[in-house]
Image (cartoon, rainbow, N blue to C red; front, top):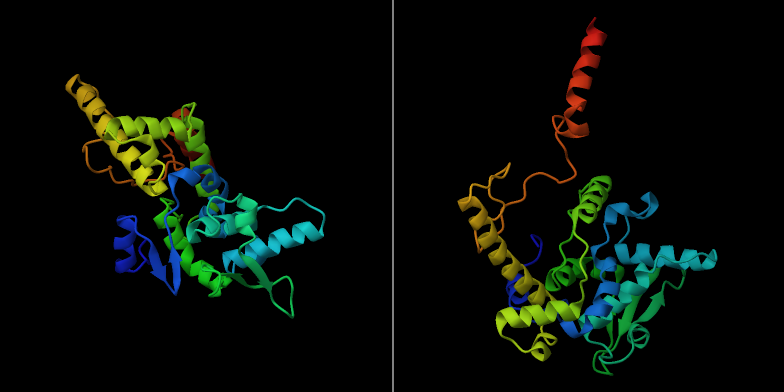
Length: 279
């Protein structure tokens, strides 16, 4: 969020609509959570993971080119372009209550007249009269706002894709299997906050996720505090030292020191190999 103007950051923190470049972006509501899960990958996709030839173009243009080319080659498209349309339709509140496919069609494609593989813009009419346009370059500028507005943390532009994939794999491997559903989450947050479930479905998704993290953080603090009072120790200290703030993340979870790698056998092996080379 560092490149988002302070005015917009304040609006995002208050779950308010954001007007920028003549476009009004709304936080996506919990009631649209299932569609949000489908569309989310288009926003959080790591730009550096694109084919080398597409890294220098706006990400929406890359999605358009990849999926169009896949269709021409009779292959399955990535689906990232259609997911972008769905995310935009929800953020712009186009066709609320209509099926996702119908909402996506409210964003009309305008290819370049000289090169149909190049997307000139997406065109839509928010009020049935005024015509608005989102070019790939504009989508690139809106993407960080769309992410922050809906609780999506974008990966840094200079991140190593292999390291990011390794972290995701470690996270999936270490995560417990949960019978998770949005209905369960809404019910439990409702119980903790003494809010009716029907009201929570009208909340922005980011608000629900922030409340969930706040509740989890407070519970983790109590649990760790009890453990600490009973003599429990952690290698890097109490992982939840505050009920209000998360502990700062320092090292990547995918980075392992030589003393820990391969069960601690890697460092002696390397040292032995270096000694043999010197001899």
